[in-house]
Length: 294
Image 1 (cartoon, rainbow, N blue to C red):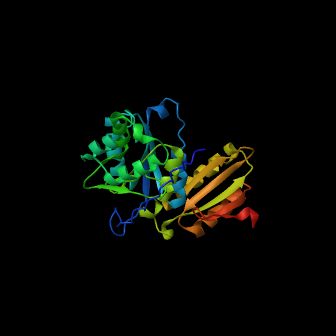
Image 2 (cartoon, helix red, strand yellow; image 1 turned 135 degrees about the vertical axis):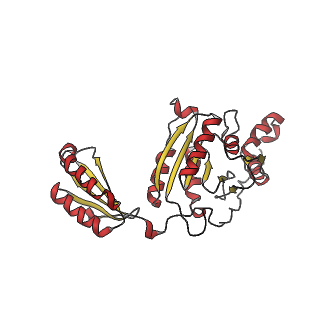
Image 3 (tube, helix red, strand yellow; image 1 turned 90 degrees about the horizontal axis):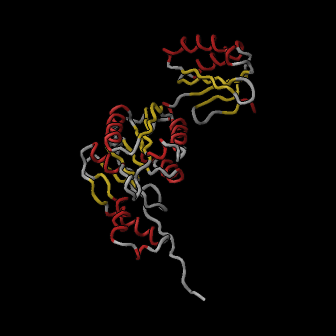
């Protein structure tokens, strides 16, 4: 009978929260996302990360402005990253950070911002400690070890941060230029690291988060389209956004988003009367109250 015992899974300390990378008093208002991978473009892999990121931004009160899916092409990755970092406060990339030949994200982004690519000692230390708890790595050839250590070959120098956000994961989030955060593409790992990164972000204060009111009508979308279009144009300069979303069974849910709650209440009642609607939710974005159950 064997007396061998499994190697316990190691845990690691997380990184300390540093100063605001955007500058004192500034916070994230806009975001962009880069989904990297030929496997997404050819349909082999279904992208769910962008949907999770969109919902995550919405709950945080951050306006997601753009999502781009691009190939495993160094020039495309570099161009897209430079453009998004210039245009948005927070950018995330997913995909292309593994040990295989087509995992080129770290190298491409290092080139994009003229940074050296170097092995990160703490990342390698954690990677090997975690790996030994799962695999028999002693039998790896030098070539295989080199491939594995490519995952710790990170952009370095000024403008690069390596952030460890979870105690039970060795994979860091690399942040470049204070704005671009590099994530792996595996959905479970992406979502876990993204949520854990939250304390390291300069998020909008609660006072900056808008309100959202939802009104449901059983009228056909084409019936409400003319009136809703006029309403949207009327309130555009007030910073109020009007949306309509057909329900699966019947009717339409109308969304009002803006910072002036009293004005939203006025518009909400106007929609109720004009479109025979019912208010279903209202409140601060991400914390709406289910009015229908009150």
